[in-house]
Length: 310
Length: 252
Image: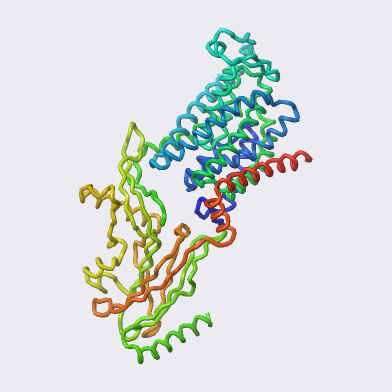
């Protein structure tokens, strides 16, 4: 059954969208990731204009992050003060990101920038994850269990501890400069606006390695920030570019919610390293597909863009 | 179908009656079975039936033109390994949709002059290059214009082949005009030409509207007229459905 999407202005099979939502939801439930970085390229592959895909995916992430954050708040795994600092940066980043998005759209370069950002970030994340989990598997095989689990004392001499505006974060047991989380927030905000992702895959490592937050509060706090940043992106994209299709978002959402529940159950039965290596391969697969599309000579070097209707 | 037949009959009768009083003006009469192509939730393309009658012998050529707009043609170039948009040329007043139907081969029905003058066939459309690109040399303009025609044909918005117009008996004719699912909205014009001995002797113009209706139209208009509010509503819907999902799955 086909459905005509009012903003994307294309006719798509409804079950394909529900299925895509379900599949990506399943993966995000299984791996505990947001799934925006898989869904946006998939939408582009099926013919949704990339500007609509990015803005609509931001809208969908609002919904999936809400259900995640509720669960984490119950377990008191959210550092609200840290979340607020990340959020300040996130609002600055995403607002300038949407502005940049409109400027690039007018120049006819937005498609390229979206795809290039994906290739760059997916290859870095996928590569690192693959390397790390492959090493973990090899180590396990050779019998050195838990050898790498030495607890390092936190280093207080790095550049990040010389920054001003120090602040105490009780929930994370940290005393660091507020500029650090704000800076992380800015970067993630820009990515959210341009790539249509929550940015968890950048924020989570940054929170652990750069800010030194305890892993227990990292996921909940990042989800808290993601809700507000993607909400900001949704509103700004809708207001400036009119590219948010909530019919599309809703269909993806329905599939996603159901898929995530099944994914979480399967994920619990699998080993961490195997799960991560699978995710890494998937991320690299999407990355390679996008990269090849950019490098192969297109069938027609010319393309059409509309200047404005009358 | 019966109503349609009555309508055709009525057209024919009124035509023969009219032909006695006004000799030249209505040598061809045509009508559409619908004056609105409605884009609703299930829209996946549409067909409009055109029917009519001619007075005496002759051939029929039908042109359907969509609303004019500016189109920008961009050329990709390889920059550091990837293909990126570089040069661009804008064309004003380009029909967003173009379709042609005829009772025979266009090239045989009318001479080249007429084909060019009346823009019969997408390849005979005239480019209206935007002011800022007028200084470009003719060869480049032509390359970009040809690229526009190619892209439009690829999208199914410009006809690559001529749709048949069929005569039912001597004077009645009909044609099925197809509209793909990606048609632009707006006011279309259907030109029905009567051709005799390589000359267009009579033309009738009928308007046709392509428009989103119902929920589709409401969402689209909401998104464009109250875009900020639309963004807020989209966020609220997402927040509520996220919360609902967490409630629904906690009970299990």
